[in-house]
Length: 81
Image (cartoon, rainbow, N blue to C red; front, side):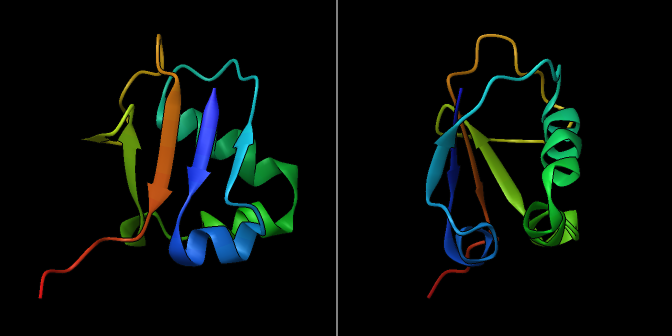
């Protein structure tokens, strides 16, 4: 599956996107796998209250299942203006 990182998430990880193989069943499990990789991922995913996720370009929750998902995007909350 493709992972996309935006704004400060991308800055902390150092990549705009990557392709990963995972056994995670949910977004939360995927995040735990990523955090265990190395400190830059742990820093990017340290505060989930400051993070949003979209699965195949649809805003989702962290407990959403990953079955059949092709793209996961992580980004900070957006504000209007």
